[in-house]
Image 1: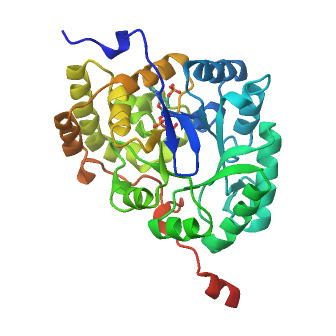
Image 2: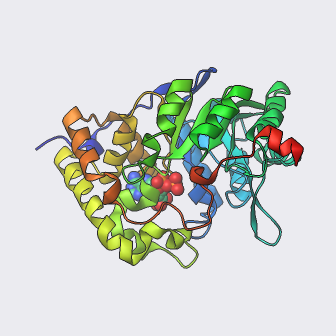
Amino acid sequence: MRPSFNAMATASVRRMKLGSQGLEVSAQGLGCFGMSGFYGSPKPEPEMISLIHHAINSGVTFFDTSEAYGPLTNEILLGKALKGGMREKVELATKFGINHGDDGKMEIRGDPAYVRAACEGSLNRLGVDYIDLYYQHRIDTRVPIEVTMGELKKLVEEGKIKYIGLSEASASTIRRAHAVHPITAVQLEWSLWARDVEEEIVPTCRELGIGIVAYSPLGRGFLSSGPKLIDSFSKDDVRQRFPRFQPENLEHNKLLFERVSEIATKKGCTPSQLALAWIHHQGDDVCPIPGTTKIENLNQNIKALSVKLTLQEIAELESITSADAVKGDRYWSGFPTYKESETPSLSSWRAS
Ligand code: ATR
């Protein structure tokens, strides 16, 4: 029998350079989204703080949050966890631009006043003097990207943020932003069931020397648990809204999970580890940030760094996960993605 990767005693988290400006992070990060709601109720704070400390002690030091997570409460949680000497051990990434008003309505904001106020808010909630990587979470299509970037550049000059990132931005938005100030990382959904970014965005990042941060590398849990995942959804789990989890699409999508599981079994690893290993094999400029709320799952995800795939195994995985293997859009209609992220030109904006 082939050795099981779960059984391997040691796993190490290597370090990698993200982008071309000097940022160094752990080669696997930790997405903190699910700790503060959205995937069911918020998880108990002491448990999440222990998980964050465990991650740091295990070498996972690249933390991903946002003002929108919670909203706000995820940054507060991370801030509490980083007290007492932990801050300097981590690379802290947060995001601005998805604003939840008091009425709960969501608004995308990238105007300079908002960018500045959001940054101050994040610094306060996180209890830190600077943010390592500050992303625009979603692109405000009313504001030229150059204008948003102008304010971010000032925040770099003031030392409030070290590096700039974009999330769910189109290739042309990335180019325009990068011309104002170097972009260190682009965050995008990239996994065995979300591969559309390979066409244009990934090559653009590579051409410009921008690091790639892959969010939802486990397909929000689908690539870990398959269709049975939906049986665990509580009433307030946001995944119930995602097209790919709708029964009419799930019936088709489950085939993909079954094929991934078969290959994982042959390989002696779990489907989660195979999905992460595939991302880790996409290049040394790619950092996946799986989200978890459980120490055992974090340990398992770290071990994915030791799963070696042959070119043949990668080709097999890619042949079963081509675009028509997945039914349903990534998001529900109206939720902003890179496909609707073009901003007005500076000249048209000034003239209006
Ligand atoms: P996101 O970026 O939105 O967090 P993701 O990383 O693709 O999405 O997947 C996160 C989901 O995968 C979570 O539901 C997480 O559940 P737990 O919080 O219970 O861990 C699940 N997940 C993460 N790692 C896992 C693992 N090793 N085994 C099983 N499920 C896992």
